[in-house]
Amino acid sequence: MLLKILADSVVIFVLGIGSYIFRALDLKGSVSAVILGVLVMELGGIYPFLALLTFVIMGVLATKYRFRDKVKKGLAQANNGVRSWENVIGNGLATLLFLLWEHHTHMDAFWAATFASIATVNGDTLASELGKVFGKRPRMITNLQPAKPGTNGAVSIEGEVFALLGCLVIALFALPLTTHKAQMLLAVLLGGFIGVNLDSFIGATLENKGLTNNNSTNFLASLFGGLIGAGIFYALGGG
Image (cartoon, rainbow, N blue to C red; front, side, top):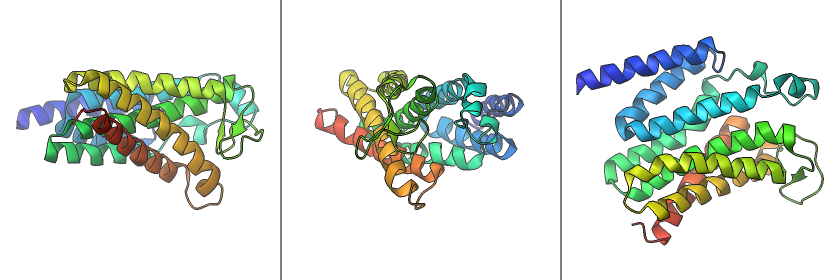
């Protein structure tokens, strides 16, 4: 057991160094990601870890895509797209909480919650970063009034498509962990997609009023997305 933990830690440490070298995360962000990765691996195993790793890779690629154009338009991620520990916690804390519940209860509904929370942050990142590039007519999610690209709470058809694809990719990692595969797929996909739009709604309301910031908005959205995913899974008869 101890050897497995050490081996997992070494692999995750190497990945953390890579995230720092390729400027996906700063030093504090990389350390936080390593700690989160080890906890996720030991509590949930390889599939949630791979889902989180996929989120990181897809998020980095989406952030860097046409980055200079985003900079010129004032839409680029702060700090040249390099994220820190607050972003790691905001995107990963809900997942860790759901894994703790699954580890204690051994209920598939909490697998649905775990992956729906990851689907939420993955879908949101793709919708945000690629929606800025491809979104043609963004509108506020609260009143459907036209909005500038990058505005908190602005959504577009193109961004919604990217969000759905991002959720679907994550949902695939959950399937080996349950015999209720159709229910799990739908629960993670819908939970994540609803979570993405809740992120936009929270951004348009609480964040625009200064009551939350980007990281706490991400945490709340992934928490609600996970809970909704668990509820959908249970309602579909997943147990």
